[in-house]
Length: 164
Length: 123
Image (tube, rainbow over all chains, first blue to last red):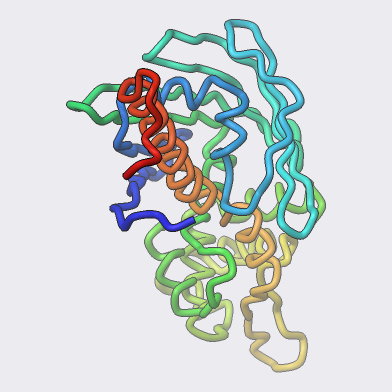
């Protein structure tokens, strides 16, 4: 598929030391209703959630207060990662609030809230995730280390120094 | 990596002094005394941190030399980072894919608005 050259959305992460939360913000070039739909329609959700090449197996997707969700991601080499949670709140076009648990490390449950704001004809999505401990979050923060990149010791030192 | 091993590794990484120790060791091996100096820690104090790092498999203390230098064990850190390293990639790429899906949706909408019967295959 030949797609026109366009600016890729850039996600910004806010990760303050010693806090249990993590915030990411992205501006998407589409109206708010469409973005909200892509988040709440399982067929659409399955098309975008996760890294490229990963397939989503939607096992449960009850996008309403009290509803459950359960999705398994299948990597290109066949590994499977399960995720599940409960949807606490859905405010059409505005907000989705749900719990999130990676089944590879069960018991570490986070609360994630996605907020949708119209910016002209675009949409700003702010995703806040609150972890159960700073330790849980810092596990994610260590993600500054890029997977597959050369784990040169210098970069590692830089990263660790930043987080100190 | 087993889930509890991951927890042990993260617990070890959750302390700023221990991360600073790892950062120092990333530059090369060092003795306990050398490690204690910049942190204003007592030797028992730094030993405590080293023990945690050692238990987490993040460093190794040599038994050979008299001064028993500490050394980074990058393997465990790499394992931990491989799991967590997916986080940014996960969302960066998710949003890129979402953008693609949204552009398709917009195209679809325009098509439905634009052609009230006639196809647009002509041009």
